[in-house]
Length: 194
Image (cartoon, one colour):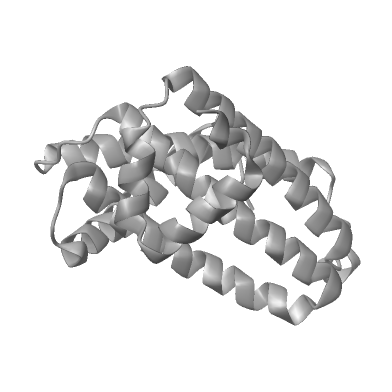
């Protein structure tokens, strides 16, 4: 398990996962990492994500001259943490409800792994933002496509589903439902995300 602390090895695994996502998902699930270790990786990824957001806010020109508060990065990271955990639970429960076989810990493993891969892309985006800002916008679109690419294949592998089209449709419907539920929840709590 020490290879998980070796960044070059993780980057090679991430590259392989992007090209063969189901195989990458199976490799990660087969590690059977303890939930405590997965949660530590998840928290570490959230801290790194908050650092990236802070750097981006330092370089992105504020709209209409309005300064972006420093705590915005923290607020968005807390929101990201909540959404990530909701995705873990939803991928597990919704998949099981329609005949899937994945476990909660496997779902958590795949969300943590997907988050790592997306963080790698975020790192490239931060570098592009400093050196070539237009490329950062392209990388943002690539990130969105990569999210769906990984989500569809990971959920299919997690639950043993064969039809990627049905998995994609299920993810879209689930995301819409989750967006409505989170909107209601945050409104009830008096929070505004944007």
